[in-house]
Length: 144
Image (cartoon, rainbow, N blue to C red; front, side, top):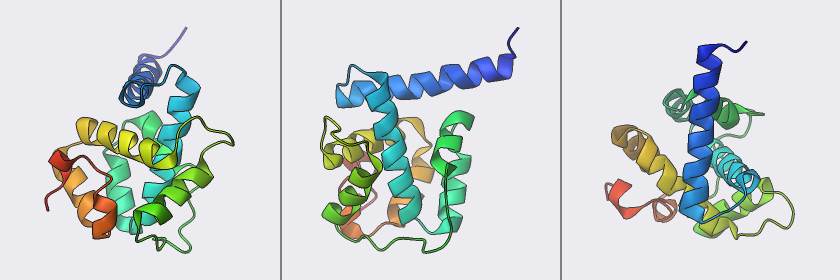
């Protein structure tokens, strides 16, 4: 027998994975999971801890757990100021021989986040990022 809350949580998590897979044109859910996890971790680490907590609170339960998995406050936020440096962080979080480059992954996951999280919260997250990193987000989500 299952519990309705857990069933809903799993269903919602799978919908998020399907959204990432669709955005990135991936056939395998394991790749969508890896892309979502890697980008969430790089974003979480780049945000000031208070903003990361506020953002994490907006995510569905299962995705929130993924976002906070293994988080260490020491040394946060990280200092990536360029797209290349941020994408290098995403790349380190991806499994070896991942079938897609880190910049494409980050853009696709950010598009999914922008479509699924409150626009005001996404705007606050983007505002916390250095201007070059904001270019990874869909233009419609950016305020400047």
